[in-house]
Each structure stands twice: as C-alpha cells, then as structure tokens.
Length: 115
Image (cartoon, rainbow, N blue to C red; front, side, top):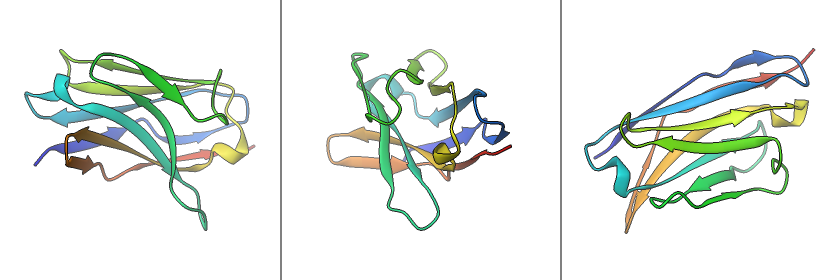
C-alpha cells in the first residue's frame, strides 16, 4: 500500500497560478509512474498529466502549454505547476501512482478558479 497526500489547492483568479504537490510514502517512489487526474462537478474524471519513472511526460490537450508535471525522487514528490488558470480548470485534483498492476490514489485537493 502506498499513501499519497496532495496539497497546494485553493482559490485563484483566472490567469493565476498554483503548484500542487503529491507526497508518496514509499521508498520505491522512483519506480512508479505518476499522474495527475481531475474531476469537475458532474463530470467524469480526466487524465491531466503523466510522468513516467524515466521522466517522460504527457499532457491532456486542454492543459498543454499551461501545466507542467515534474517529480523529485529524493523528496518522493510529484508536482503539477499550473499557470494561466481558467475557470474550466476548477476541479478536485488527485494524484495516482502506478507500478505494474498496482495503482494508488490520493484523497485529492480542490482547485477553484474564479474571480
């Protein structure tokens, strides 16, 4: 079992920035592929960004050029830097850790973009 704890959410105005963090309680963090998902009210959960154990990244088209996913294996943490935020980015953001058939989720952190 891997415990994931997200932080960094909050209320921000359109055009603003936030950085989300997801800390993993595992000494094998570097072996996990990590991802950020989000779920807006009344909508299905969607994949936002991924970063593999080797550092390869991928992004949803809706966030390309605005969001950056990164990881710090020494700190066992994955980040999501979100710039130029839009109201449609409002959602609960959750991180996921995957390794083979293993998949773990954090509890999520709320991001609200509103003026």
